[in-house]
Image (cartoon, rainbow, N blue to C red):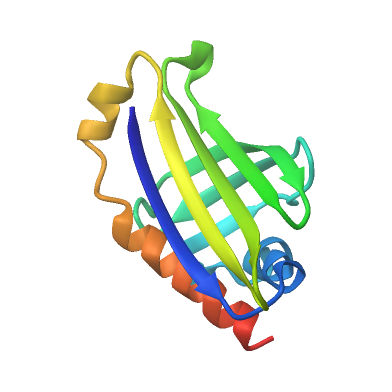
Length: 139
């Protein structure tokens, strides 16, 4: 099982961060490291995402969990659970602000082979979190 994650404190309420994550990011995804995002972020929705990490590849995802303003989960991968990526976004109140945590866990019978060929997602995760922080703190 391979996992990437990032955590950052944001000087904004969970509601403000949630808005930046679910409303601002889909409209203007580029600063988040996402080239394009098709589909609405709503419970059970199917979305497609193109990222800076793999600009020529669309990732078909499902919004598996949407618990505003606390948690959102996106899931995608291969049939029969051969390879699954599960990205979890968590917002936790932290005094006058919010702690944002994002993690992606790759599982399945083919995960070891597939994750060996993947680039390191740490810089992409850091960019996403920093952009979310800047967006929420300046809105």
